[in-house]
Each structure stands twice: as C-alpha cells, then as structure tokens.
Image (cartoon, rainbow, N blue to C red; front, side):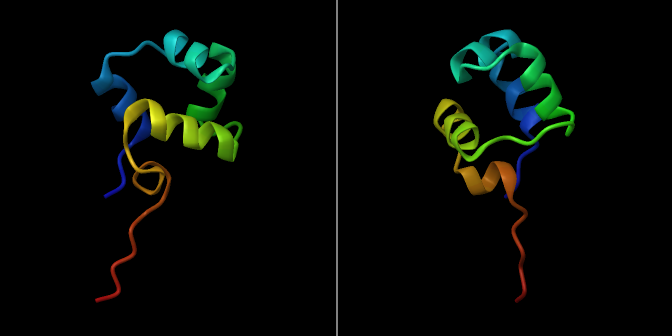
Length: 67
C-alpha cells in the first residue's frame, strides 16, 4: 500500500523543520522534495523509511496488482 509522504509526516506529528534536521537537509530542500520540485536521493529515501518505520516501497512505489 502506498502512503502519501505528506500524510505520513502529518500523522506523525513531526515538523518539517525537525524532519529536515533528522535527514541532514535544509527545511527548504525538504519542502522542494515534497512538492516535487526536486527528487529524494536513495539515501534520503532510506532515511525516511528508517525514521517512519515504513517500508521504502510503501512510501515511494505504487503496488501493481496484475492478478
């Protein structure tokens, strides 16, 4: 199941500033990534997965059911 990263952040109660600090990026950089202006690096994607304890696939990839 794919979760919206914005909703994951909102539901967690963490601020964008605090999340950016945990990821070692600026808050503006995080905002740009969340708004699709820039992409998350693979390292940042794994860090998000670690922070939120959600499988990286569930954050970034649609599940394709071909059954």
